[in-house]
Image 1: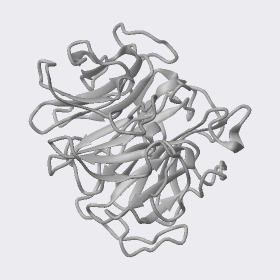
Image 2: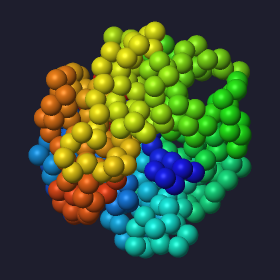
Image 3: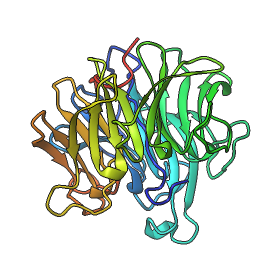
Image 4: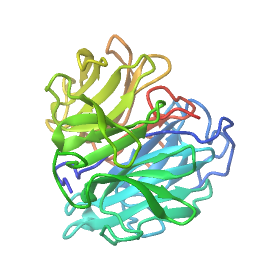
Length: 355
């Protein structure tokens, strides 16, 4: 587990239905704008909640009760969330010691992937609250989840150095990349994986974070690497990767505070640095970047405590949260605490597409 940034992250916002359904909203929030295209689903990590906001930054739905709730009824240290119809698939890793006032000594562990309805009911989960392991129904720092077209869940089980595909009907692992607990960069080895996406060609794109690469592998047993992306050897800490419609790949180069787009030959063709703004945290560690249908890029700038949207000219056109100012705001995104992922509902560009 990477406590420097708490090992965290991952992506994927596959919406499992072409029809977006309305639902009730929890935590006393207004239900009128729930699950609307254009809303943004954000994992407000150290505030222990998933929030859905409208474009003005108002919270229209949330799961979790804020930083003080580290119980199994909520989610602790949320890293990734995607909308699946009117359900939400989310991964809770936990909080390292000292990150919040109520997890000072030993931290607070979660280690679950949950599928939650709009009324806050957990309708499926893999992993056990507070349990760390790699046995049946056990995880170790699950940083990302992807809902697959067959209804399975693709889970980035970071602390166990593996990507697993779980069949939800019986919680059986039906496919795996990486060896349980083995750190490496040889065949079928990973080092602190941070995300895994299903590509339109059927391959899996893995953000192999501490191996400083994204790898595209076949979705077979055994799998094989068909492409590696490192921006010509310049990336450090690949926290997330997604395939763009033109065939390029967007990399979140976390340790360099950079978002970089590479072509199929791994040549950088565009980049943006998140640390050039006044007041920026020296250890920003952006964790997710996705390209939107309008050509803009949505970035989860984790330790700047912001989600920002930039246009092709690299100008910020929208921002949520105050730069390098963590906090908790119950009804808006005036303040957040280490937002880890952000996806626009109904916008499939750059992430697992609908099938």
